[in-house]
Length: 147
Image (cartoon, rainbow, N blue to C red; front, side, top):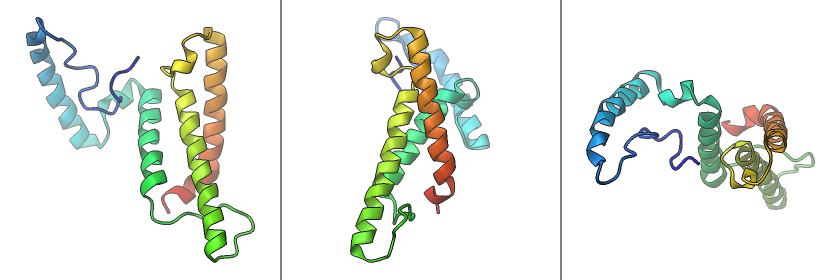
């Protein structure tokens, strides 16, 4: 199970504890290489070899931030008429969409504890179903998110 978010610059580094903590010194060089990579490319190098985990962690962060700290909501209800009641209904509907997408991202994560007692076929089926549903919603609302 991943202890740190894949986007953490020190993900996979500095794992040694006492009495072998001195072995962490070799990870300092890797940490600086990652920092230079991030400054040059704008994303963590882990995205190159853990793309699915990087995407899931990144989108969870973005959608969680957007869910809790956005300014306004795109109009997602069909009967939007303006005014306080329509605004509240629309905001609730929009929050539900984002909550659903975050839930689907959690279901896409192979390290989710819900998969601990499942066989690999059922786990794979659940993850693929969540992925398909997430990208359907993501595609549908893509231009509304950052508008």
